[in-house]
Length: 131
Image (cartoon, rainbow, N blue to C red; front, top):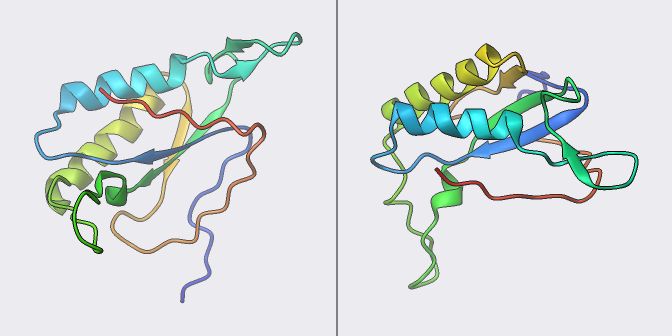
């Protein structure tokens, strides 16, 4: 197992990005915009009033086709709703570029590889966004 550190961030968010068949570049761009502007960081009163942009935070984006698992039947999840790897990689890279264009520093991993992802979760706050 390769133990190199590929990407890391300081304060910010970990985005697990699942790409569904039929997802588009427009959807990826809108979702990136939502991620950087969503007010999920607390102010001094403990209210969610600050966005990733407001705190000068960073984003670590991990491609995660397993988010699209269908577990309705049987014992083995189906991933038939996940986009094909070539198209997924294209949208994944576009998503990261869109975040960077917004002024928020975004990093990714190695698309399609197994990675050990570590998270120090200050919250915990986990939010599912769909476009």
